[in-house]
Amino acid sequence: MKYLYVLFAFLILPWSTQAQDYKQEREKMVSEQIARRGIKHVQTLDAMRKVERHLFVPPGNTRMAYADSPLAIGYGQTISQPYIVAYMTQIIEPKSTHKILEIGTGSGYQAAVLAEIVDKVYTIEIVPELGETATDRLRKLGYDNVEVIKADGYNGLEEHAPFDAIVVTAASEHIPPSLIQQLKEGGKMIIPVGSPFLVQTLMLVEKKKGKLSTSSLMPVRFVPFTRSRE
Ligand code: SAH
Image (cartoon, rainbow, N blue to C red):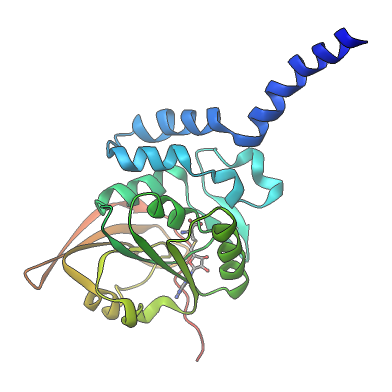
């Protein structure tokens, strides 16, 4: 009987601990989907290794959490593909002193990745239920440098502006003017621009000496940037 217990422990324990923390899956995600595709920024790679993506997807999707694709998170919204999260993180060159604004909290995953690197993340979500779930999740996981605001992010967050960087994770037909205003001198904004439900262009906007420079980075497909009715 004793031997049976020992056998049980050998067979079941390694499997169950691995199933709980998904560390190997995260390593594989980073090496195969992210580093291999050219992401080199060390803090971004470390954050992607650390943040437990499986805790940001609905329970039925846990096994798909580290797949090379976006995933449904309810309310018609998605958590972005891991590579896109890493790409958007690297391109804004986040620093430990930075204050960042994200529009489109969704699951809170991108906010958590940023929060591993920077000082403070403000993130705005228009769907109240998603904002609520993300707030609870981030609090439970100890991300006390993230503040989730349940609102329409079109006008940014004047009271905490200017921001070192702005990350928009919903596709907008144009770049909201307030977001440009709330970007610090020398700051970077990454935003998918284009028609909802079609292919959009991921754009980098930089403010240098008061002037804007924009560059088109790659075709992407994001959920639409919506507006509240008020
Ligand atoms: N960054 C998210 C992915 C979010 S998907 C993650 O890591 O999981 C885009 C999100 O933007 C959706 O949750 C959607 O509800 C939200 N959104 C769309 N328009 C918005 C707006 N005007 N203000 C704030 N959030 C918005």
